[in-house]
Length: 69
Image 1 (cartoon, rainbow, N blue to C red):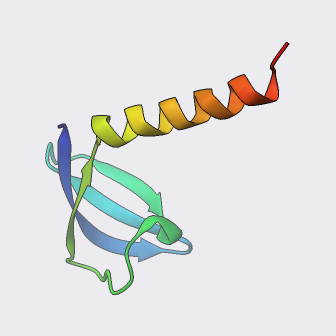
Image 2: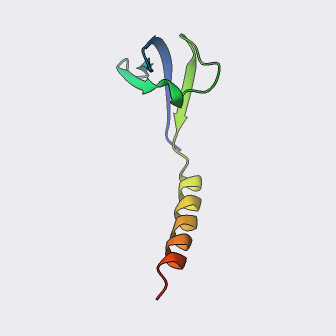
């Protein structure tokens, strides 16, 4: 699984300015952060391929039901 770690540098309005592992910055909406995240918090973002496949299968089943001949 792909995983990225970042640190919250500061907050500006409704965004958290985060420093990424490659020392660049990205703005994330505060609503994406877990409760209790503050300046200096280190967080990780991970791609979950297994969960993605489960969701794709579930959604395909719903679409198949919706668009039956």
